[in-house]
Picture (cartoon, rainbow, N blue to C red):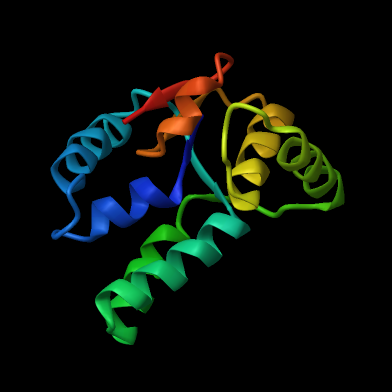
Length: 133
């Protein structure tokens, strides 16, 4: 299974993004089933919908993109993951993860997800996961 981060999703859908071509290549690998099932959390969906709308300034395009994003496995951040994410957030020392990033890490730990598609370099500091991007 592979988790998708907002940075990857936004780069994939935004042709003007500096990582767009890399995201296209990674998506080809994902669609070739190199990493198994694809997932996001409801927090990532929220973040993507907001960022894509702000960048594209087009509600209709944003809705179309988000309808595609919703087709992957969508995990809800429950109280257990939320609390774990809050502990990660409070105790980080060598990273500056957003709280949303911490929810992704907590979700990945709970669901034993080892791969993440992201362009956020801080994820590379976590030895237990494989960063694609």
